[in-house]
Length: 54
Image (tube, rainbow, N blue to C red; front, top):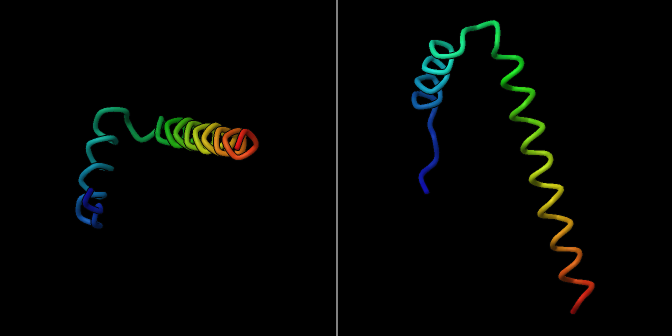
């Protein structure tokens, strides 16, 4: 998987701003952050369960 550079991130941000509008960006960022936290928590819980079962 390739990494996103600054130009690619700027293009993605511009597209998101056009689609959702500037006013909704904080809501989208908060929802994305919450989803990432929940995903990390769920995966770390699975790793702990696997280690305990070994």
